[in-house]
Image (tube, rainbow, N blue to C red; front, side):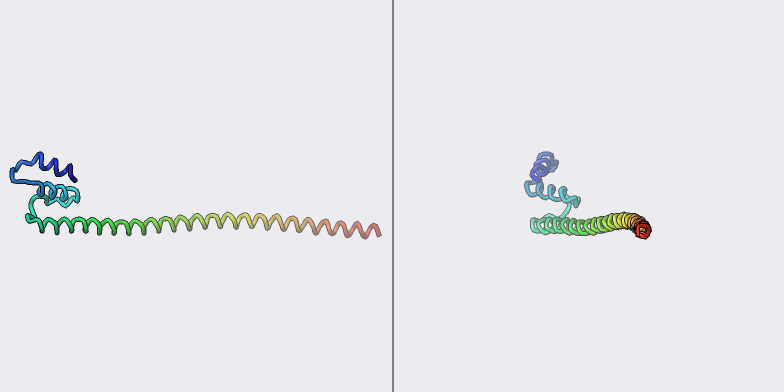
Length: 124
């Protein structure tokens, strides 16, 4: 802010401008309000206007942060749910494969039991 004042003070074309005017110009320029030297003219008016400028910037920044946080939370929740659903589908596929293998093994065990029973009958 000091550099803005210094530039304003250095290159000012009107001889009536002072340090206070340079600070005001820098404040208005930094906050991008843009009415600069026009108004207000009194020190109290400039203090009130400067306070309102910073409060306005703070309000806009807060609202922007809240909206951004909601968008990010929604994005993360949505993609997290998609990832969970994808993993769940993969696990279901693996469970089906394991059940198939289990039924094949159980079928082969039954066949082996039948063969053992037949061999036992032949031996007796």
